[in-house]
Image (cartoon, rainbow, N blue to C red; front, side, top):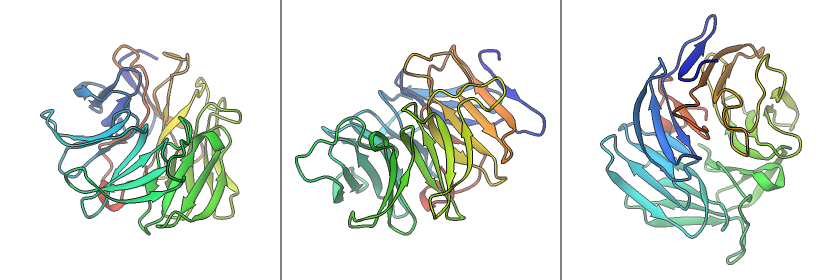
Length: 290
């Protein structure tokens, strides 16, 4: 695989995309041909969204920012807690998942906290591994990957636990699919790395494990996007001593045929979260499955 080249296999489409490089502390936008079109600082960036107005919503270590393509910061939230999750909601509010505090927040357009749900008692520090890319679902519930607990939990709007999905390997991202299944990317704790799709009864109905894709060794599965055609694009985070050891992004069909990969180890060190730019849908309306 040649650095700087997106590998396109039979029947696939090369995707333009935005991504966050946690190691370098940058957010990038690449064309479908693998050309770097835009970049901006995003220290310790983990989660991102391309908004309908073209701005980018990103986490930045202990904060969340909305930045324009001209580099202007139009929303800035800072916290004492590590933050790995952000999301723009339908009415313009911004959802934030604070890792250490275990708080699920709603911010107004100015970045002020207007509502919170506590998953931990006030004053309790959940630590670095408490949660990763949490999401608010369209029904108002919350889907929270508890990385250190090897579990994804669903909570109602008051923070009451409704369900627990075992996810050995350390869940980093969890996506509720239109069919009701949950797609989960697991990191490099024991049992991972892998991507699993789990039904309502917690049975695994589809998965990709670390060494079953020919020529590719998965290291730490961080981000996900399920496409309308049923394919799944996965980010293979190459931190924890694995820089350059595989493709950053991998697209597989439902029968686990690899149809597209992206590997640019000269300009990109790691990819945590990403969003494909050629998939239609409003990210603020739950129309993108990531």
